[in-house]
Length: 244
Image 1 (cartoon, rainbow, N blue to C red):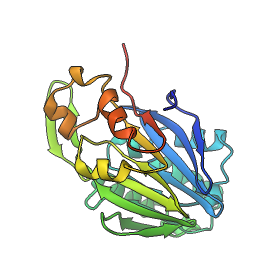
Image 2 (image 1 turned 120 degrees about the vertical axis):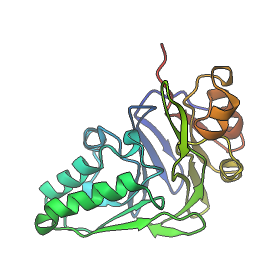
Image 3 (image 1 turned 90 degrees about the vertical axis):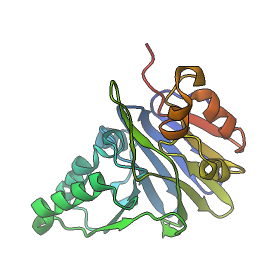
Image 4 (image 1 turned 45 degrees about the vertical axis):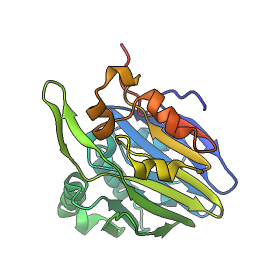
């Protein structure tokens, strides 16, 4: 398992290239996956513009954006990204997929179109990312799978479960899995098992600092995420929380 900083980690396979542009719990996350035919973004947290420009990405190569869920640290950069693509005169269509009833992403896209549809040169297609379905973009097959993720607010405890998914991305015989934010669940374990590369969130430093309910419903710990990650050929822990 590689050690990660908050950002700028790359993994190169035979058919897929992964760049973790940034990932820190409560701040921001965005992950780029490329094939020889194009690029996909998974989540667009705050700072996404800085990071795609820093990595030298061809903005026209982005065929689709997939969201794991609607929390601000995973979608807060969506409106600025769409505004930037509009400003530079992008003409290529863009697909945006999010879990069903992911109101944060839906409202961000609808509000952008309400303001700028008349002067945006590219078509935006907003669709649901449904577990059990397969989506094909840039030569990749993307399969959402259900995960369990509840919101939490310091001092308020665990809130209701929200729409959330992880993603299994394949190209040829190669498989990359993104957990998204999740508690420990069988669908995550099933999808990570045997993957060529797994990107697994680990917000808690250790299981001892979280309750059993938090580990099942909110976030993984580093030791629990490593246990799951070891069932893949390679893995990295991301989205770590603040460390005092």
